[in-house]
Image (cartoon, rainbow, N blue to C red; front, side, top):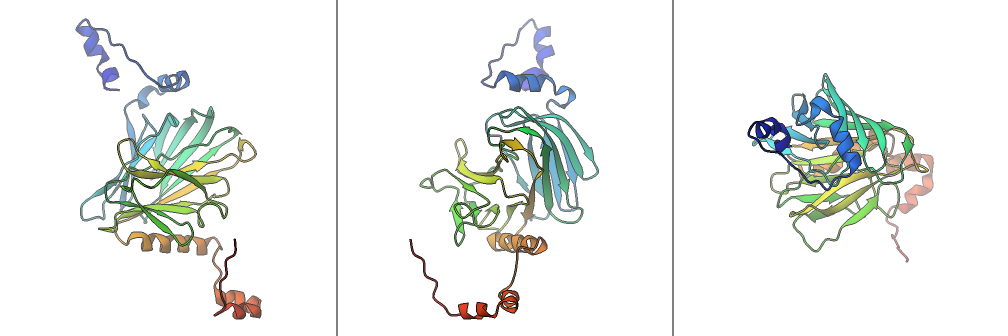
Length: 287
């Protein structure tokens, strides 16, 4: 990108710039259509967060102003992924037209900050064939010493520096994946972190793999519905200045209550008195 910005200067000195890229012809076509967006970013803010969408690679950085030392969560692109064709701000919202290179799929994305909370909701709309997984948003870079929080079984904390952990993908909507549709990253020392809640978990999964030259990262992947991108997908990021994984779990519980997924034992007992027989009973697993 720096060569492109200074191309005129090279020409004035009698030099010709030649570049080599491993990206596809589709990616270069989309790049040429970006016009004024090349090398630019768009920003939105609320009292807690500053969000910057980078048009070059469809990543966004989020700065949390509440932390003692201003914390910035930075995304890193993986593969060709998604390209920004056009984008604009509208108050505390970014509206963007995206192109998913792998599926040749046009999408409309909305990045909306909550007015008074450290939360960012990403919404994807579109229609069309979707033979491959859709990888958006991109993963946040994990620093040395941080851990990934994965609600599988009783809950697992994966240190990002643990080289024994193998890459994996886990679905968000069944018993053979994560048990609740969320994931997180946290700094165990200070407690700061980021939580991602799948508000549309039926056709989604998470991927845990390694950054180039670094530790583990975690990202959302969207699946097709009968081969199509046929309904709106929604993911909400919640940023924490402290509290660790406990604060993240509590925030997901609040969300679950809000959408009607939580029913207490007392409520179940009122509907079926036999539920009371479960108290003190053995929990037996057989496989």
